[in-house]
Length: 561
Image (cartoon, rainbow, N blue to C red; front, side):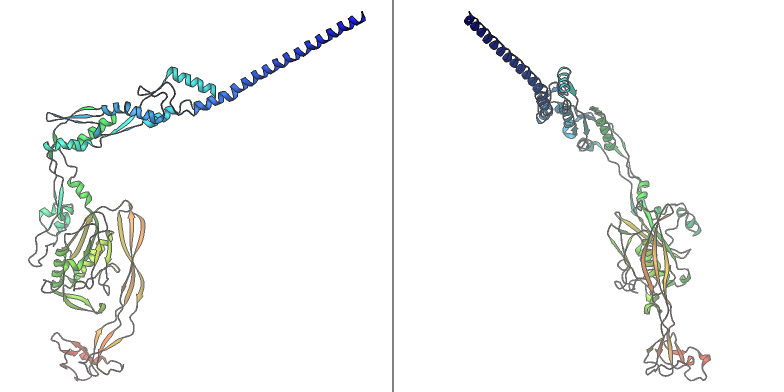
């Protein structure tokens, strides 16, 4: 009995152990399944959805539902969409761009090849490609669904420029059009003087009240604009036919509003844009100057030379970059060439003598100041050896022989300039006016000034041996002349206010010591005033101070120079 009982107990124990082991396995399987579910859920929400999000964001094709001008580009790359739209939407736009002109009963059509059409296709595609490229997975999928269901429609915008239309219009309009003739001008050249063989510019520049005071005719008194004296203006002449400029203005308006189709071309008078008033605006008085010859008006030879020189310089036209040369224009000043003897500076300013063409330096000085006022480039200028009645530091001289001393300046503007010189016989002035393009916006006026830098005192007297003299006779060659150095300036102004002041440079007028002619063998002894000689007009010499002589010795010596 005990044995059976033990066996029964043993079998029950084994069954219980086996049952317990099975429960543990089931539990482990359940836990494992739950873990797998958790891992799967984590994978779906963390890894898979992120991969899908990245795939959506990095897609190189357009999403389903995207259209441009009604053309579906879903699933296409950027380049594929460009090609698609070029053959569809852009072609339709180009086909719509044309204008048909009806002129004199005939029609002429400018197709799209005569226009430059610029579409914003690339901008539209870039905008469409940016759809559903940002946000989390849920937001992206929701946006993709909305795009697919509701669509995203884009429209290409474009601009039109009629780059080839004007030449197209000319192809049919020129045959029926007489173009307008613009206003024009030429330099007014007065008649030549038989006296000077140059243009007669006496009192030519006087207008209005000046002309009236000078006693000139009513025609000159009626002129108020000096440009009407120096230039001959021709009024514009209207044309008739197709006004291409006006028609092109209509074409541009139609292009801006994208209003293509038909244009009726009307024939009408054609007015020139170039009027006399506009021409005058381009002929700006850049520089003008005046110098007086009143104190020398009685020297008829000098007046003749001034009139001749003014008539030769008058009307000179300089193209941009071209140089003015006084000696080239005036030529050699000789009797043969029609110049008359008049006082000219010699001996470095220590003396004067009559030379053919004497006095023409006044033309150079007057022109020089006008050039400075006009802000032109001076390329060659020499002052007088000594102040000659002009503003110190602002004079210019030329030599009577061409090429030795010249006055030159250059037209440094982008337009031609016109030089006019004339004589005012009533006020005894030499005048110069230079017309050309207007000043730049930085200034509208130039003022000239000079400042004494340094006076130059004469040195010790100098003695020059003259073989025709004998002791104790002597002659005065020249009195002492003080010299000086001046610095000149150009002051630029705008609306009356100083903008800038520039130095023109220094001008030196030579000093001259007293100089004497003495006899050979002179040893430096004092010169006795009673033996001073002077030259007579007939070439002989006589005592300069006869009252100072103690005797008649030497009087009427008969010495020749």
